[in-house]
Length: 198
Image (cartoon, rainbow, N blue to C red; front, side, top):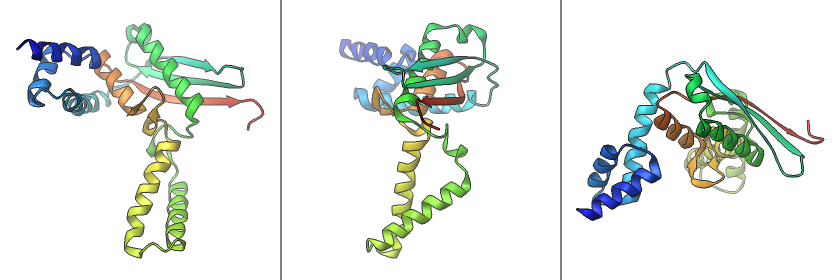
């Protein structure tokens, strides 16, 4: 029993989720901490989806200027209340996202923001490349799908692996924050400047 208590404490420290939910996840995963995290993340996604419908009328403008002052980022991170907007952890989340943008240079926030013409062009390029390299025609749709997924990971902020923990996407980071603060949190817009870059 004391082993379960230790696992619950560890899981709570790692996720910030309530002790009762951690205990349920540990029991459901038969003491496997990684499976327990996955269970909580799946549940968190369901809870976060409910909160994602709520309006985010408060927030902050976070900034990051990279060492050497050659790259700078401004990002608008929104939440529901001024109380959360003034929270140190929320402010740090904004800084982390700004740093992510500086490092990974996304072009859009989400997959939904990518223009359909861009997606069509990319699909054509991937299909043509697969054909030229001799791939069978029936394998091309799957190849195109895989390359498009990679395109989203490279160009869409929410799909990008988090620079501090590549097992998480930026969307996972937001979901964790939504669960922690109990409010909808969203990235409204960002701008990334680099010296001598249009």
